[in-house]
Image 1: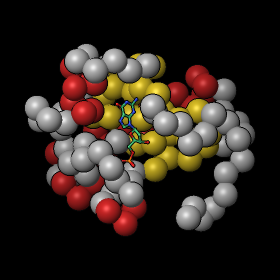
Image 2: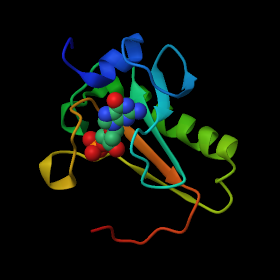
Image 3: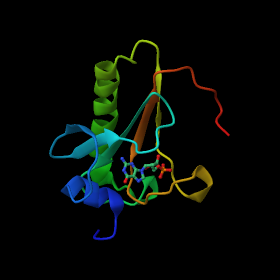
Image 4: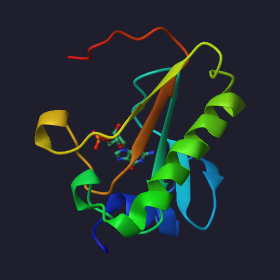
Amino acid sequence: MSDCIFCKIIKGDIPSTTVFRDEHLTAFRDINPAAPTHILLVPNKHIDSVNALTGEDEQLVGHLVKVAGQLAAQEGIAEDGYRLIFNTGAHAGQTVLHIHLHLLGGAPMKYPMG
Ligand code: DGP
């Protein structure tokens, strides 16, 4: 989508600190980190949110989670623990309408969040 900020990052039109990329997804550091490690894993194809996923996307979602685990290990936070979040819709505070998986860790976190 031409006006989507994450599509622009994936295309390279907006700079980001990319930590992983393959044919299915791009992972880059959040511009406004909420934890010492805060990475966003974003499918290269535009999907608005979890609400817009179809059966065809099942493998893609599994891949996002699998790569998130690998990045947690790479970041050195796998042993102590981390959190994976898909904010979906207004009540969850989704601000970018391109589905993304937050990988957060590097310090103890409270649950539930506010
Ligand atoms: P959410 O609230 O779940 O939609 O999270 C969107 C996240 O995207 C938020 O934590 C900030 C991050 N973000 C927004 N714009 C940019 C950007 O231009 N670059 C990067 N790296 N992150 C961004």
